[in-house]
Image 1: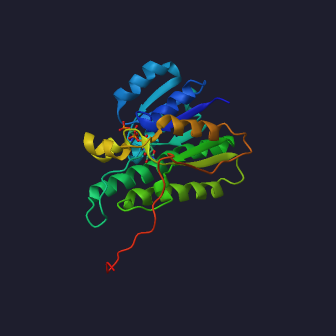
Image 2: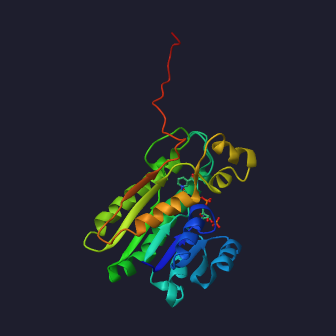
Length: 252
Ligand code: NAP
């Protein structure tokens, strides 16, 4: 199967790897991100099957305008991968920066909603399509300082499930991909490109690679049309979720 796939977050990490995976297999790819230079570099590499669409997914008007302006050969989107997203800061809720919280909500939730809403009517009209959302294990399991990032990914998981309910009666499919620690630019963005802080999470372990996740997306999308894989959790072998914690009031 080939067609048109729109990938948000195509300038780095999982989205970038997914663009390459699908393009190499005959798909036409709309790559979305804010950094146009990165998208143009990818177009140089992948050729005319890649269309760079530079806009901010959290800007509602830009999203609507960009999807409306797609060239005809890229306009009928068969698959949307919502990979644009970020974690910002890693602070206790009582100390966190509200700007970080706003940015995560605007990107991970609002951006995903705007892009999804932009492509769904055409998918439903054609009775064909696939929405792949990037959730996270952080949307399944809580951890200290995960607060808004984890909550935004729980939103992605639940929204995906509710989409499934709304789309019953159509052949439009949905899936939430939930990676564990994956080596991308994610940690650099989280820690404002502080090298020591960004490298620390990978110390002494083998994290997932962006290609491990793009492979899962490829597998999900290429299932026969009567098969919907709704959730995929992917963990590094070197990672597990924690145990319960206690605030012990005595030491004996
Ligand atoms: P990444 O390497 O930092 O890539 C993030 C991508 O999102 C970049 O292409 C970035 O491009 C784009 N982006 C961010 N804000 C945007 C905006 N407002 N408008 C348009 N594009 C925007 O991170 P990644 O690891 O590939 O993350 C991809 C997804 O996987 C995210 O949703 C993340 O939450 C999720 N995830 C990651 C991990 C992990 O450990 N890496 C684990 C679980 C889930 P520009 O900066 O050029 O706009």
